[in-house]
Amino acid sequence: MAIREIITVPNPVLRRKAQKVTRFDDKLQTLIDDMVETMRQAPGVGLAAPQVGVLEQVIVVEYFEKEEDEEREDAENLPKRLYVVVNPEITRTSTETVTAPEGCLSIPGYMGEVERFQAITVKGQNRHGQPITLKLKDWTARIFQHEIDHLNGVLFTDRASKIWKPEAVVEDKV
Image (cartoon, rainbow, N blue to C red; front, side, top):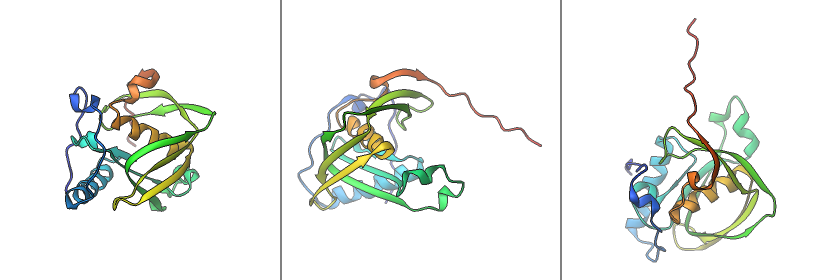
């Protein structure tokens, strides 16, 4: 496994549509392993193959088993669930939407208010090519929508109603 470089705007690869994966070979397995390691090192909660310069439909997402655990003080010790989805496709969406802040490893230093579906169903394949279906809601659904957008050359800034640069938090030294 290796840490790959996360490409950032204005790299044109981020605006290109990723190709469907047809070969579930060692090269794909290495890409997936590298993406997981890169996402964790960044640190991030999701990563799409185009973000590491590979135009293939592969995403990895790692988020808490229970979304409410994110707010706990001991959150770093709680279990997270790793999702690897090849050729993901959103097949159902809720009518309800939620607007919330998002950031992106490929657009460092910026945040935006983005409206997303509250719940979605994603169909795709696991890393071995077997079909999978995921019913997702809330933040996990938001992460998946963000990563699937990357596969279509869409960035969160394209969907944001407002974009800003968060101010750095300066801690008081005692």
